[in-house]
Image (cartoon, rainbow, N blue to C red):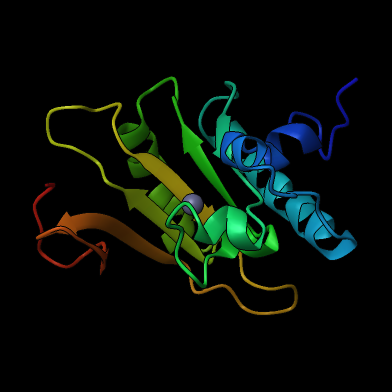
Length: 167
Ligand SMILES: [Zn+2]
């Protein structure tokens, strides 16, 4: 029986990791991480409403320690604290949904620390994914909109309004 953290988002989907399962790594949240996941789900409920109330697929939530590091996640990733969710397979397309969400972050209507368009591709509107990260409890979010791209083989995070081309 699924245990729901908020109306539409279950604990299971926020902590499941095929990588952790395959490698036998523990991805069980601490009390603090669990509380952070609840905060993330509360924001996801708002996002869900903004995007028309259709289901959101969370491809990754909590990634404790090695679960994050061993699969190449950023060392300071908000996923390690349970403060982030990656969204994929969005009904309207990932890129389109990202463009719909961004103004709400910029206008500070969604309490998002970083909204990152991850590896969107020119010719694949459903490619890439959306990273949504929150600030630590009690800290003011930065309301940053970033995009991640591979530039000459290295991952770069650029501010959304810097000139760029999708690569
Ligand atoms: Zn992420």
